[in-house]
Length: 133
View 1 (cartoon, helix red, strand yellow):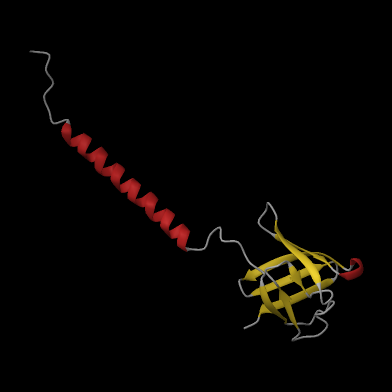
View 2 (tube, rainbow, N blue to C red):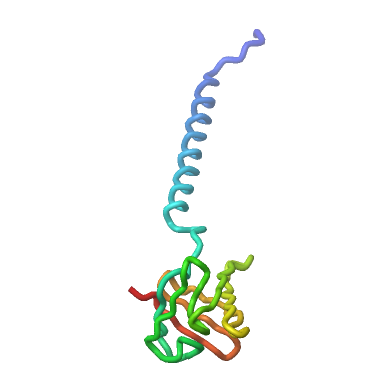
């Protein structure tokens, strides 16, 4: 008997290459689905929001009042000319910091229900908003 090995070793190599192609395609598919699912897309508060009630605060003093959050960092939640910052926390939640005239405003916890519905809470104040328009 000689020292040669007989058998078809190229079949296993072809199977490994084929398997790697399938894994690569699956990985690309997962990336594409994740990209188009909106994962990682940050919430934007910019726009007009209608107070759904029953809570009131500052310029949102009754149900139906519109609050504007501009892309320039200004809003009218506490007073007609507030500055605001929406901050995403490390746990994925949001904080809304309002700096109003004469020191009014404060920090609200923001619950994003979906892109068009949010709840702001600060102490015993709860405000429900729906994106207008």
